[in-house]
Amino acid sequence: MNIDGVRNGIVIDHIPAGKSMDIYGLLNLKNLVCSVAVVQNAQSKKWGKKDIIKIDENIPLNLDVLGFVDPNITVNIIQDGSLIKKMHLELPETLTGVIKCKNPRCITTVEQEIVHSFKLADREKRQYRCVYCDALYKE
Image (cartoon, rainbow, N blue to C red; front, side):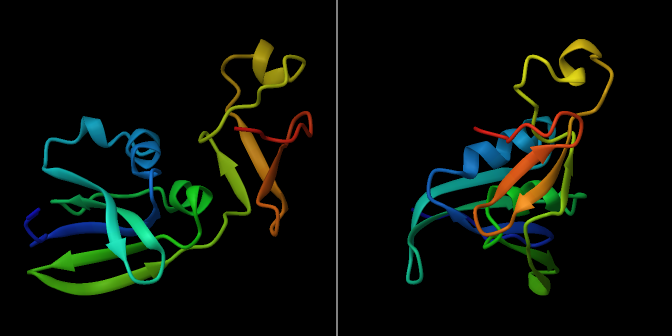
């Protein structure tokens, strides 16, 4: 398979195999008018298999979303065909407007205009809790 390189844009690399479509949805990449390539199950020496997303334009990215999906993801900024910046991510301390609280008693269930917000409760277990009701986030 041959997918052209990015001349000016972003390459989101080292995505765990099967997670690229989650990122595609969370970042609303379907709304872009530029080319977006999603490569799934690409060979990786380090991980065995990985996904890659190539965006043919420099756009603002929510790095918290990417860090939440997997902190091992790397974001490469390409300009004039050369790598100008490589970003390594971490689990974000807070997530706002990314995931939703599923607790039916949470204020966010009743008050629709309240933005869902979560805080990192356990870094090793990658667990987040709602800032309003303290419910543990579960996928």
